Each structure stands twice: as C-alpha cells, then as structure tokens.
Length: 192
Image (cartoon, rainbow, N blue to C red; front, side):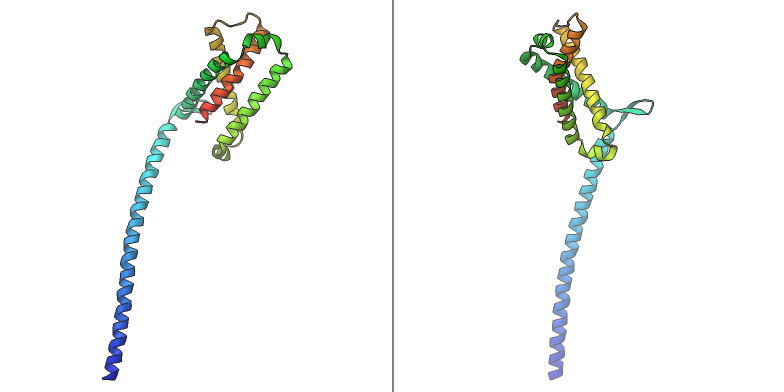
C-alpha cells in the first residue's frame, strides 16, 4: 500500500509536470501564431513598399546608357520649384545689378565655389545610403543637375523681370550671383 501511494504521488507529479508542459506548449503555440500573423503583416507592408518603389522607379525613356526614371523627373520638379522659390527670395534680398557691377570676378568665383561646396555637402549628407550603393559620383551628378536647373531658372526669372543685361560679363555675373539663392532653394527642396 505504501508503494502504491508513492507510485500514485509520483504519477501525480508526472501528470502535473506534463500538464504544465502542455500549458507552456499551448502558450508557445499562441505566441507562434501571433508571430506568424506579424510576419504576414510585415510581408504585406514590404510588398506595398516594393510596389511604391516600382512606381517611382518606372522608366520613362532611355538615352544611351542612361535611363530617365520617374524619380529623376520628380527630383527635377522639386529642384525647379526650390530654385523658383530661391530666385524669388534672392531678388528681394539681393540687388543683383549693383552686385554684378561692383563685385570682382574673384568674389563671383568665391560665391560660386561656396554655394557648390555647401550644396555638395548637403547632398552628400542626405544621400548616404544611395552613395554606398552607387558611389560618390552621384553627388557630382546631382550637384551639376541642380546647378543647371538653378541657372536656367535664374535666366528665366531675369528675362521675366526684364533684368537681362546687354553686357555678357554683367549677365554672367548676375546669373552666378542669382544662382546662389536659386541653388540654395533647389538643394533644400530636394532634401525634402
């Protein structure tokens, strides 16, 4: 009888342990189900992000080795909008005609160097991930693209405001000085 009581106690202990293990397995099953649902949600979100990226990366046309994508068009639009904003603010703050007549070429080249340097640093800081994938040449290409946009916008603004100088040297100085504000606007809009 004593042996049967001990066996029953051992059996009860084993059953209790098995019951606790089953409870823990049941809990783990619920956790596993929850994790699977979360994984499905993450996969769904990744699929949505991939679809958005595909829309942005859609090719518009190809010129030689360069493929013009929708993201390039969006960047040009943002850069142009920023350049127009910069030109508008620059016209109100700077007296371009007086500066173009009074500043020496060294000052003009200093302004050009300064805006290109600051802009390239801002582009470099903002495009770190893209630079790791494509290299530092992207900074130069983006800088040149934005500067050309800034010059074109500045020229159009000078033409619209009736401020085009008949002298080529003064016109070039005015474009460079005005591109200072236009470039600042263009770079800041592309960082958004």
